[in-house]
Image 1 (spheres, rainbow, N blue to C red):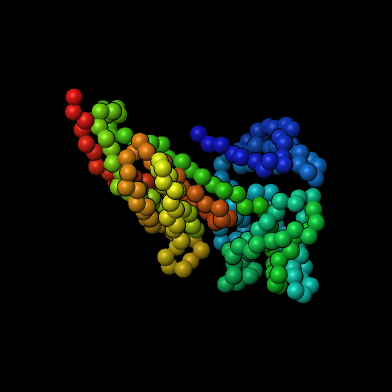
Image 2 (cartoon, one colour):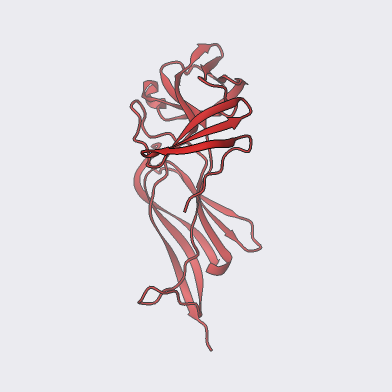
Length: 232
């Protein structure tokens, strides 16, 4: 199952589904807006190296007046905080630019980003919490009379920019192991990344998280573990 958590300043007034999209009438501090939430992932838009993962996004061209570039939003929205540069920016294509709010319809960044269109929107946190693993018998049923000691988790990813594997254990601070493409690219075509756990499955929670606008596709994952059969 999946859950979407909206900003605390927003209230869903009405909701409807048309084809592969969920349309919501949302009330926020600036009034009412209609938001589209794709049920199936959108294709990569023309002029971009990847599909930017931004909420409330708009494709806009900024206007430069030294020292800042300013983008004008089509609606009131004071939550926009990021721009992803399109291919018109050459070697900077795909870069994420932090924005500051000027007023409810304008955001800006220091520097000249007026060369072409950018995807402007709001970053969000993606969090995929994995189910607790169990040792299983030949029939697929969980074997409950054993202790499973988790050594590490290995994630197989495709077309992925960056992500963190977070390990949370009882009476210990959460630990993050963060992946970034090893070849210096913004998005890695395929690869593996692992995080060490070192604890009982009953005491550990593993999740995959990302707060960037880059794509994350986890094709598969596996726990490496040892087990001890309980006697009696």
